[in-house]
Image 1 (spheres, rainbow, N blue to C red):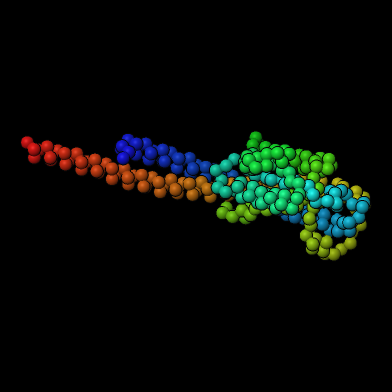
Image 2: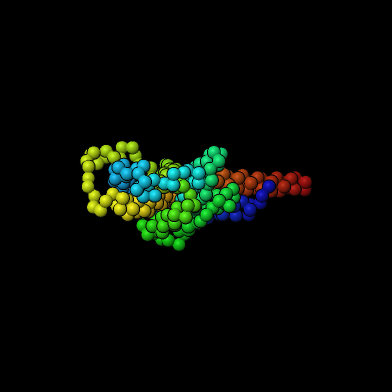
Length: 292
């Protein structure tokens, strides 16, 4: 049976942990509001960009003159999985859920005889994937030192992806991230970005109107496709940031509640042990008095 001092130390340690988890919950809640606003503000631009490109690309899909980023390599043998996760933990199953989705896709592709490679953004995803796919990870991008995510960060990642594509390192690239829905709900998402997959209704999203472009459509797509790639990656990073703070807020709230339950159980055990020791001492005093 632990001594009263050990029980007091346990209670003090649990209270200190509870203070830390409560503070982390409050910090995550304060950062969540800004991250959520930023992610929601980025959605309309990314969606409209995708819609406009779908409308423009509808007329050139399948043509030899179409940009290579649009028509692909003509094969789907080599796949690059762009896995975006957080740089830190203490956020419940947030990182694990994204990695699980990417791992399931990778295993399914390899079962079909495809070649799979990983491009990791965020250390937590890299640490999980390297246990099983260490030889298939082509690059890791860490964003730990950044205080605010910017579009230039997504542009640099997009440039690296395009450079790998130009070197014929892969045929298809799929982006994995977590889309923010609410504090307690994040949706793990897989979105093919090379060659891009547009909504079937994108061609009619602008009212079915026919537009003339200056310069021509091919030149326009050569300019817009790399930018759209950066826009989609930027949206994924912003959605991930909001999802991370939401998941961390929920995880720290649960940890704070669990710490409170532990403190109540430990206090009860302390009181029972203390009462038993007092009762034992009284019995010894009474027994000694009766012996005299």
